Image (cartoon, rainbow, N blue to C red):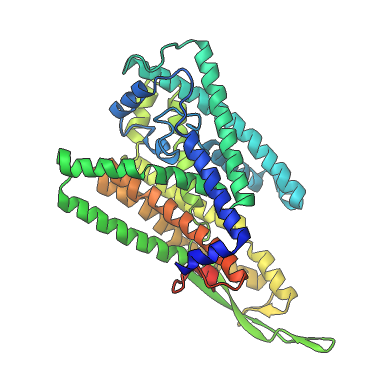
Length: 436
């Protein structure tokens, strides 16, 4: 309770939190506004009949907006996909490599290109969704009363505009709010579906009898243990000792102290999960263009969340992006040079190149268990839910990692604001790394 009181005492932090909640509320409100020309009731019935299909996971990430064909049906996924493409190009294309080295001007140019890429991907996915919704007319007549060209143009323009607006919301949250805006938007979408998923689980237990009470208790215990392990692995560190030599400058003495470099087992946080899921949704986006062709059945068979092929590819992508994003945000060479500049060294290692190689080797080793853990927690619920209920998979796997990871990161930022102003941390007896 004291932590909440401390938040209210800091005007800047209070404004940031209220601003963030306000924009998230706008996002959730927009998720209930249906695209013009669609019968929302008939569409909901069509999605219910196609429950567990190729669009189930996509619908999870946009908080059920796809099921309602809302103006935010594409959500933030086109922006994430564009960011992945630009980051991959930054590692192989000289033009993007130069932009990365140009400081703030280069970063703004990359952001501009990413936005254009977002619009292009939203256009492609918007065409696919319009085609997919039109195909639902064969299952539930009346989903779209008028299937002419005007409907398709209106739908695509609405979805593109919605994606641009969601992207703007995420950027504003990152700049003026608290936490990472893109991650918080995905977080809000997943949390927004919790009442629906919980209701589905309880109906399966008490009304339909599809799930036994023992199975429900087992899954609840599993989720509790999984949350504990996610928190543990997210906060786990490998500390490399660093010593700074004494330096005399004028009449003052600097250095002469020992500290450490905290290398987190999961440096990339929830980014590998989000990136991997974004790529796994790409075949579904392509299949939407051919709803009546064999491609849809092929994707349903091999790339649905319960498919072994899906689980294997998904796990490999999570491990890959864990290493990829860690390499993007953590540069051992720059760290070693800064240590050398200020007289710091790792005991038993020569400053400079030798130190950089040692840090890189340790980083590679600690990232492996962290990435394997992410992949295991993301995949294991699908294995357990194959014979139970798909809500368990959505509720306990990918969504669990994202919700816990984003919550911890946001809480860490709140802790930092409190400690900077000499207030007690948000959790007086907690061990959030940001408080140390």
